[in-house]
Length: 314
Image 1 (cartoon, helix red, strand yellow):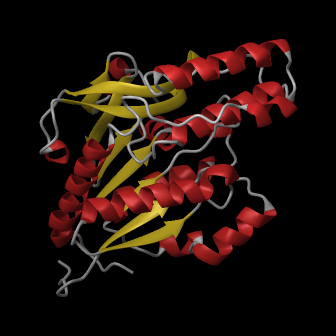
Image 2: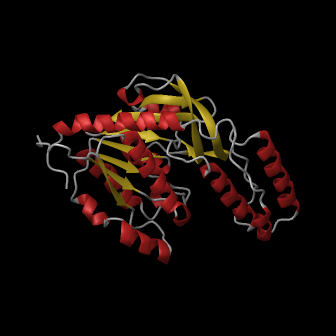
């Protein structure tokens, strides 16, 4: 058993795999949420990114300057690990260029963390690797802020309300029935979005989130504008659906009017005229309290569990 020093911080690794346009934002969102959840608890956040993730020259330079080499991770023992999702590039996860490293990371995390949190596509990849459960594609992308209800009692949900709202933004789903049949415990679900958060106790406690409690209030709008741009550039066939229960009535009307213009005049130059929407809908900030509570509980779990973890944190 490792002897702890007074004031020694909890060490959390963040493997940030988001594409170039969201790389820095995702880093900021996760680190801000972790520090808010930690309160007076000392934490140390170590940044990594899957080396096979496609990057521009500028993003690669940013990672080289601000993130650790991924080789360092294999030699480490972390208290906790967070693995972000990314945009899928292939219909089958095992065809993604980073797949061999991701599956190695799943196996490594089981042996070298107290708990690992797998977010969105990383959750899909981990579950597929562990139990062969394939994601299922939605007819339309799921985007918006969804009511989620607590369906189990667990320390990770201590102090949370019976229900809360969480942003979801994904084109694929892990079916609840397949998860429970494979021994996953559902923690929260949404009638509209399906399984929200679930877990499996292995050597490490693996937590899986299909939603995005780390999102800031403008995240869904930025993703919506990105998808509109892809439609206007003919990179996707259909116009994206407006995020559900996210914008107030005035903003939603302005965005709907822009959709009408975009469908009649499909040109990327039109994107510069997207209405200056303020995200002020009733659910725009509603998930922050639940997110901080869940992450605070996770950090407490790490603090308690580290006493039984063999070896030293590098």
